[in-house]
Length: 264
Length: 238
Image (tube, rainbow over all chains, first blue to last red; front, side, top):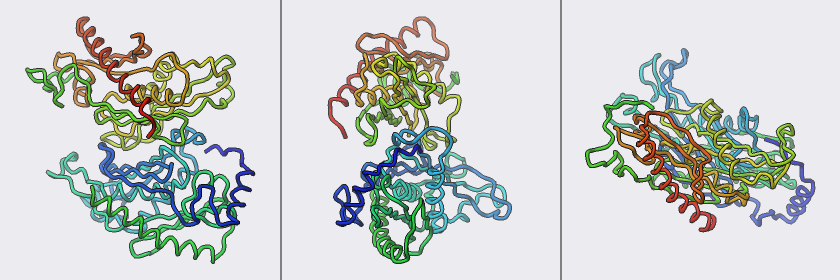
């Protein structure tokens, strides 16, 4: 991503607002932008979801391939998760090989889903040592106005939960079966803007802010992935404040995924 | 084309596999303003094709070596999302998407008034999210609407449609089976106000009479799609 001229005025403006506990778009510190989730939106994907958080819009699509299981895990299938931010998503995203930013995005989302154990990889084995399903989750942004992490993670888990194993296409049975996904890991991201952490930073807050922290929590509030990104220093107190908010927000978002699943 | 003449895709009454008559288009719907961070954008849903296009610019031209002193540079990219096809598409450019990007740029450069923005760049990004058949036409159509939505001056919008031949019958707007197993495919980019062309490709086997019929189908369909494009642009943003 091309880094725009660092707007010192924007930084100063955001810091000034922060002193009065305000944000530039009028939100409270822990308030998110309007969040919408739709599932089953793309017909050629075996599972799909679209997430809109404010002006950030992303898609997630699930495809399946047949893989040879790894020699040390002959009874297991695999999960591959990758994020692509193409230049369609904003004026500063450039064409070319995956940028470090998009690789980080994909890997952090991947860890949250993988480590939660929501996908039973043993269930994906077809012939031990020979054939297994590989689940491929592709995350695709079309409009970036900040907080792609949360948008990708939400779209990703929703797409997986709606995915059908294409057993008819691969001539393995007469009907497709749902991909078993037992848990709903949810990511919440915080950005330090004007000296304090806020939830769901938009594009301008990301531009005029400092470090960010991403937390993925599972069904029982177990922590599945953490990531601190960008330059900055934070304290234990700051972290526990974030963690406390993440626990309540993850519940709300998990509810949103469950509702979308039922509506599908 | 595949040329599998034994796959029956049209019955004796001229009804195609998806229920259309030979001259019928798939349902087309267009929406503008679908990418809020872009200067102009459009979504085109055409059958089960789903394409979005974004326009950024006119902006400073990078890298400098592609800058032109007398006009703007049009930087067009056509890409298919990895989950857009039946089998997963590996991310990144391939020869097909390079070619389509180039012919799309050639078509759009013919209508955009580039000389109004010397030394600038206008970026046109076409993303296919769900592919059925005729994605290059859907992408070019979406790009035209996005350019108009961005307020980039053009002499006309390009409307792109493909007709072809299945089981020796000329039909309008090929769907996936017809594209895979049909005998010919003729995609065209039409300027609806003048009936002129800025984009033309063809592969397969058409007699002179069949070619004329396919051409006429494309011309008629372009007028229908053009009206949908105009309505979308007049109808206000999402």
